[in-house]
Length: 359
Image 1 (cartoon, rainbow, N blue to C red):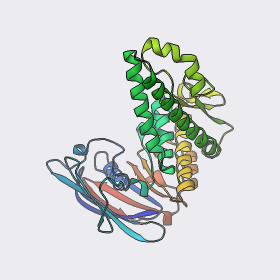
Image 2: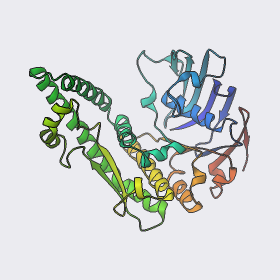
Image 3: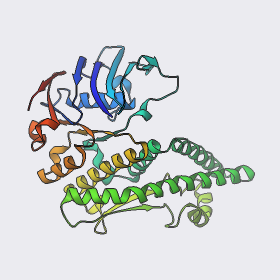
């Protein structure tokens, strides 16, 4: 799958713009605050129905306007199609696929796969476990149609269990929520462990290719409260939970532990090691999604490639340029130097206008 063209109307600093893309590497370059990231965000928004930068639609709609529109022409591997969205400031949406309205409550996000890498994503490595859990869950939602419902049902069980723990109520209701919490939690942990087993060799291989060193990346799943799983933790901490009045275990507290040569990257990794691990994880994510869905993700590298040295950058592109469509933003157009000219189209972005350039 690749995006052939995008049309944006009242999106960020774009009043109206139409841009055609190539199926390989598309570079948006220019000075800061001209609209490079906004254009990459528009591609992401069109394909996923949400932004990777903000949760608030009002931040995206061009100042003073009531609504915005985004449309993409794309090739899905067999046919050319078009997706159109019109969204008001109150987040009321009208979405059509090939001029046919999507049914109410149906999201088009599952039709497309996008892997984005932006500066804040180093938090996936450096910050708390919630981002790493979200990383695993995001992949599983894409490859397992029932996983989103599983997360929703688990959260309901967790919330009800916490209410009963907090009030000190016991009895059959509490026992029922305990069993639901354990059953659903174990399913989540089982799904995550199965994903880790599959993605680990892919990520480790990507890491070796990008790092060009003998460093070994290790990926482990850490259960909160016990190294044996949810029911074992439950048996150990249940009495303490009753005293404290809240749940102390479960997949909502677990972590994905990343190490290089047995040293935690989060605390001991250099900036280069952190970024190498990040790109390895993201490429691993794309490979997993493609394997299970048979759909090629689109990559978005938003202002991140200048943080890589030339060797690591070339290694990243060597792994993805022949397989995936890539959108890159940068202040420098030489960020794609070394790529084949036939693989790359450059666009100069200036004050909300996009100008195609030949290499």
